[in-house]
Length: 433
Image (tube, rainbow, N blue to C red; front, side, top):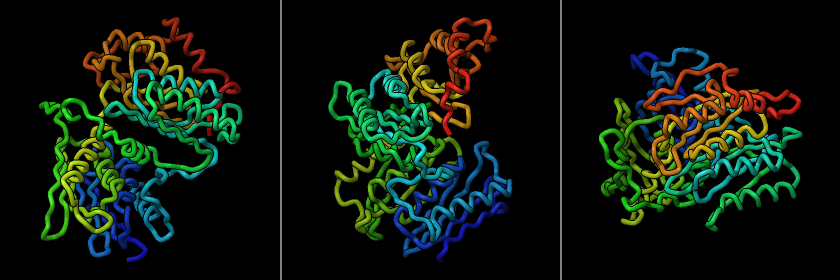
């Protein structure tokens, strides 16, 4: 069964698209396919996994972001092409890191990876340092969990718009960022590479796993409070000795990218999924995996069983951000991220998760924030921030009290001052590629 075969069935399920993937089996192939589906923003409603006996035969029932069947022929063909390209005979992937769909390796960006102790204002300090070092943040993702923080960033030189190539300057960037991320502790890690590409979310899972964030637990062992509105994940691991498998069961509230997060974690722990099923109909998600370690053995100790449970719980919790969602969309410029996060910090907010990107000349950023004490963000604080940044530039998602409707820019003196920074002449801005 080489090359692999990808078929799409749009007739057997009335409200979803069914994708069949058949191929010769190899380590990490399940993660490759799931990562492609995730990168294409498909929602996996059901999945049946079978990769025993040297063959990989999986079925995924998916919808688009709106929950509808995919009917556009060009989109369907794109799904087939991306999966084939990812696992076909000419593919050469590493389970440890692979670029996102549609992102090619490039020497135009400098890649920065940071791991350390989380604290209020951390993203503001990092972005301020990069701005002072004449670097423009093209994209970035920041995760925080259990008192730890990890970030993957792509930056360019302000003047050239290309990667920072000078070795001495690269060393200076690394040293300054290390000092910021270290804070009062001594367990920070920084890496700066002038070339290469990586999948940010894939890499963030790895970095948090390597940082052992799953071990940094509070008094309640780090589990989310089991409330009626947001119960924590329930994970179990038992051995099925007759078939020489360990059976992993995950029960939690459904959300986008959940399948990617769990499969990514099992792969990082060097476990192979031989059989599995996923069902996410309704608000809950149910996942069952029949696994063995890459050495061919099931889980062989109680300590390892507990470790798998902790790691899967951590993987699920990392993306369940605490805080209020803020979306910023405006013209890109050098120092934008530094200015926005400084305003958050000055108003007593801390960023728990961030997704920063540029699309042409536009900066499209998403921040999850809370106040420094961990409480809900007050409406008056939001109003003050939106007044300073711009009410049409910064949108609030999911606050129980709706902010006031946007006012005209000329009605806000502080908005005018900030807009003079946002919309500099093109010759003064590094808009990136």
